[in-house]
Image (cartoon, rainbow, N blue to C red; front, side, top):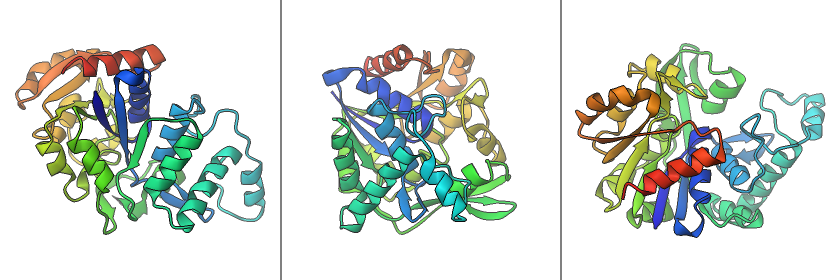
Length: 305
């Protein structure tokens, strides 16, 4: 079965791992958000792609939720001595990832090609596709002015009030990612921030139409459980931008795009309201704190076909 997962952030990465645990029964393609990408220390950093690489290779630092487990920070300390900004912490192994990506891209490789080569080197057989190979950045409009996503998310610790989210760059989706949507048996929108993880993917020209016209079954998983995000600023961003901070609010954003919507058991009572949006509702355990829950959720999603 061909499964295409739209993902960004921690929730989407955990669900990708869940599908990976299903083994060869699933031919998984993950379309990764690149709106978070940034240049740090002169290197191309792709946080969502890196999280997928490290998770699927068994390298992720599960305590931090980012970076390589057991990494050291000697290079970061030295860069700080040289006067480089220290707000974006990069481990030594993580730095090697950014350096290798940048080296490949400076030699002419696309982000897609660089990602594929790096995944292969790490023993990953799952396809990880950047949503676009073009320069594409998420801009957060705040009371302090427009901010690149990493400035908002890391440097300012998500503290400024969000007034709007927009995407900067004349970017187009890759043919590979559109093909992955069109050829899938199942398209899943992961439990990622709908505004800044899934939003940048869907905002690319033609992507919404590709999802709508795909013959695949289409399912979205809510990242909001009992009125809050498990991690990150999704709940605060939804509130700031006038959306309901509930699974219903997320379902409204995906209404007309997917056929089914998954909520956690804690939100079972919201089923009737979501069904009024024309969506079939599945109530499942979605808090993926263990491999077993990740795999069970992936199995349940495939079982909806």
